[in-house]
Amino acid sequence: MATTNMITSFAQTFFVDATDTPDGIFLAAVDICFRTKDDVAPISLALTSTTNGYPDISKFYNASKIVVQAKDVNTVTGIGADLPNFTNSSKYTRFTFEDPIYLAPGEHGLLLQSNSANYEAFIAKMDQLILGTERRVSKQPYSGSLFKSQNSSTWTPIQEEDLMFRLMRAKFRVNAPGKMYFKTPASLVPSANRAYDAISFYTNDINFGKTSTTYGYKSTNFPSGAIDAEFYGMQIGNVITPTQRKEISNIAGSIRVETTMSSSTDYISPMIDLTRVNSFLITNLINDASLRTDLISITNAGTGYNAASLPTVTISAPTRTTGVQATANANVTSTGTIDAIYIIEQGSGYTETPTITIDAPPVASGNTNATANIAGETSQTGGNARARYITRRVTLADGFDARDLQVLITANKLQNHDIQVYYKVLSAEDPDQNFDNKYWVRMRLDSNKVRNSTNNLEFIEYRYVPSGAQAIPPTDITYTSNGVVYDTFRYYAIKICLYSNTTLNTPVVKNFRAIALE
Image (cartoon, rainbow, N blue to C red; front, side, top):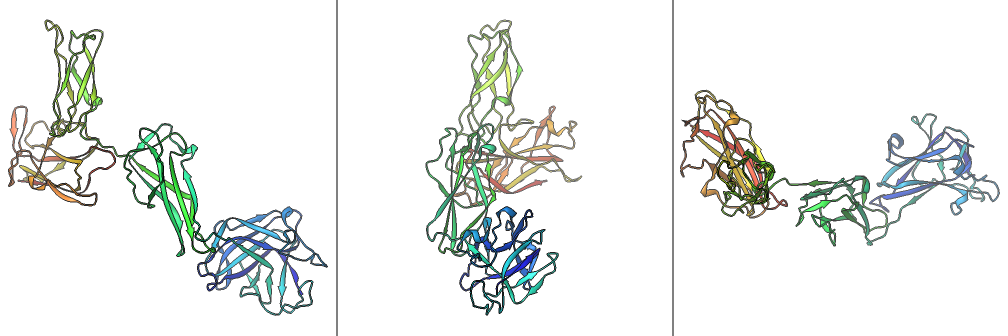
């Protein structure tokens, strides 16, 4: 005879069969039949793992606890025609998980709990009559066990009884991929458009042997703002370098990800943790040794200039022979002086500090020429490179003053890349011991080491030597300060500048050595 049991804390173990479902299942809901309930107190159901056949409440499955309010619990009396019936939704109570819970093959437990003792659930007991029939319960329906507890920690197994319940698994489409889309939400878009050169996506996904997940992305192009026409395939976690610069705009959806999920069995599906879907944008701050207005300082404003006829401003040719010469204009004030010079064409290839020449005022008598300087890479401080690395000042030991420097780097340098190395030295005998007062000097790439990398994975060792160095070192390094020539140094620093004619790919340096030679 089917009977009922008072519930305070009640557990039932069950098995996911490894033979029928070797990949496991996704459990969507659990149905329970109740005879009585409380007027106010809710009842909860949760899934747990088991330890030595007992439910282990220290190992609840994430998001598996479902609370049903008393008003939503259906009951049946178990008398006459009012029997538990899983074909009639008014005769049972369904506990539906917010998301299906994955259950691997093996033993699991479901736990019913309430603060009230007024809940009674139907169970089956060996040798008792099945409600509504003359048949008796003659065997255990499965290998699970029923447990009772007063404190939800110490469990007493009830060997001849089992809870009446039904498991509802999720059923997935077979070989019919489904798509899911992610996009930048309106709440996270920047206040202004921001360009980027590379992007990497990360998700926490799980695939089983019979499932697969693939990804694609599209984004808006910089500076047009037009979004890609199609999704481009990508690998999660890899850095993606598009063929043109992209931007994340202040409009939702400027970056979009397409996820395609597929399964060859209806028991399982790939899983993605939606709380761990994110992306990282990379903006490469690099230029091709071009010039900027903020690098220019007026050293003499001049006099006698005419705002109606601006003077010609000439910037010297770039150091690199393949570079583009920069152009600039001057701003003349109402008093006939020059207070600013603006770069018009930024140019390229200025790996050494250029000069600026400003035409004389229209009337030379009684007037003065304006002059200006540019803070380039061979100036004392500053520079026009957007990407640079500067070492700390190195101090040689007493008695080990040097005359020569060699710099070796291992780098990936493509045809459109340039890497320039500079040094700054200070002699122990120089009265001006302010290291910042010394000028940077560009080094020369060893003629035997000029080959470029053939792809972005090939790294080559390059050697840089002082500009006047002979084929075979050592070469004396000299500098002049206050009219005195110094041919040894106690202190030195190295600066490495990286250049590229596109922000989409940049040179990479992974090893660096500087050697001071006597």
